[in-house]
Image (tube, rainbow, N blue to C red):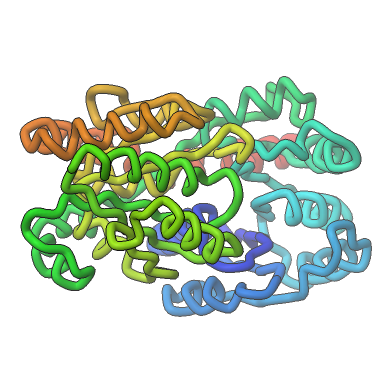
Amino acid sequence: MKVIHVQKSAGIGGSERHLLALLPALARRGHEVRVVVLSAPGSATFTSALSAAGIPVAGIPAGPDLNPWLVAWLSTIFRRERPHLVHTHLIHADVHGQPAARLAGVPAVSTVHGTHPFYRRPPWRTAAAIAGHLARRTIAISHHVADTLTEAGVVPQARVRVIHYGIDPAPWQETLARHHEARRRFGLDGADVAVGVASRLIAHKGHAELLRAMAIAAGQASPLRLLVAGHGPLRADLERLARDLGISERVRFLGFIDDVAAFMAACDIVAFPTQPALGEGFGLAALEAMAAGRPVVATRVASLPEVVADGETGLLVPPGDPPALAEALVRLATDDGLRARLGAVAARRAAEQFSLEAMVEATLNVYTEVLDRQERS
């Protein structure tokens, strides 16, 4: 089966990491996969990673939010390449790739990776609904995403299939052996309990709330230290906030980390303090932390309760509540047995309920469903 995936990218985030897991797995099963990256500043890191994974990739300019020329350009590519399927990811690719596939006479599938508020407001709701009705099937990465799309009328409920992100646990399980080496790399000593957060430094990811929680924990003489992995436009503001809170010596801003497994190896706890306004679709970093055997402290919003089992693989706290977040972090910092117990269950849950093979198999089932229906029509 030949499938062309289309996604706009400005770097490597959750949806890009998803494709870097899915596409090589599809290729190993003998399918021909290619990617058209709708390029924005920063996309070179994604295209380079795809090439390094052996996935053929082409980049074309993403252009403005609504770009008729992009529809024509993509349609020409699809006519030339003649894939069995087109698979679009994220709203920009959906809005342009779905009409282009229809014009080229190629059936198309979409994956929706989040629940951004634009799905509920014009003109994007209208554009997303057009793309959603053109797609033969829409893959939602969580039940929360599926419910949001159908309630907003963006996608017909009968066409939605929920497929959670999947992960190969093997590389993450190796983090246990790398723990001491990784801690030295990030400047941690034996008494430190490291909290990690790995995400873009953008609004509503909860970094400010996490810094305020760290300040509360510092007032309780806890051994917590914070490692912040990721880059983004809010870095300077967050560094300033850490100084204003008097916790600069407890916080390290690491920038973009290409070896996320090594980062997880250095952490004792991983925080995922997303706020409701972000529209979090899944929480891949939380799953990666679980696969690495790390307990997760996450906010009880959007899809995160589907990933993190409260009291079993981590702790869930209300969003926008730094005292509650601090309480959960201090509880884990001061109870080695609880950290170990939650981390062990987290690793089992990641391997058993969010496997890469299950995700690949479910994705192929959607492809087969679409192609079988195409042959019958």
